[in-house]
Image 1 (cartoon, rainbow, N blue to C red):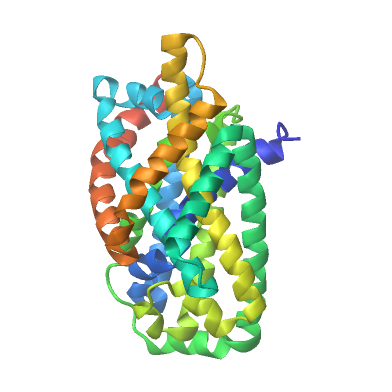
Image 2 (image 1 turned 45 degrees about the vertical axis):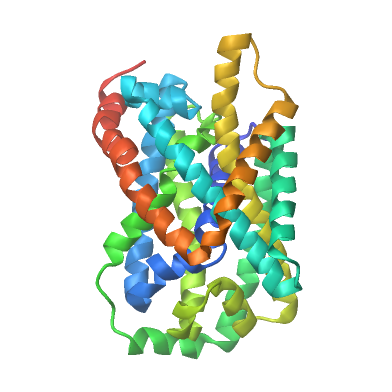
Length: 363
């Protein structure tokens, strides 16, 4: 079943990409507010369109380059793209991993504390356990768990849409007619897309099933579109409480409390918590794929399951030390650092030499 066109091309790449993006880019809603909704109702739509186009270009080029050169871990990928400079991305992504995992554990722990009264540290430790367990069982279980998590998310979002239309359509319409669009939607959309899309080389394992350039283009288009759906729905939902939502520490949690039922708020908190953990699982799976290649070259075989779990656990524990910076500070500082770094070591090389390799050369 997983070898069918539906799963190889449409579901697995989209589920992996959205699962990783959600925890670090959507889960708290803070990122959607900072980079999309802060541009106003109409300006936010401009930012979302920019987000989709940018992600689509990065996905298609990266998937095709990986397919042509069979480079599904980020080191092999950048040895093709940057040649001797491949290590530059490794330096950047180590910092990026720490930032992403710090946001993941902080957001998950904070939501559990706000909603259920569970201490932030306990929530963070639960996330640690989920990440270690899923990475222990390997890529297939990781991909299957991501598909289930994304399916649950879309059920929640579908209910949210119905509730918005039923009770808050006038407030949303009034926001679009009252507030003028603000400048900066394109720039912030680019910053948001590149800050999150720069993790894409860690996720190339989800493109292993793509067999042709047509499949790559379809997978990239679908994944970019699917990944933007939560941002679009959250943006419209935030307009029901705009501009008050801009000041909220965890806007999605606040928004569900305002426009939805207590039951749906409970369900969303659980789904969000799992997806936040999936972000850590997804990016660490990319690191594990890289370490498996290294270990195979050195020792003749990949790391054991215990080795995978140890790598995941060590990375999460180290990143938890940054959680004291706070959610907003982590997001703003993290995206600024990663935006500039990813442009230099990933986006510019991909859009220049990467395009040349994809369209002019064959492995």
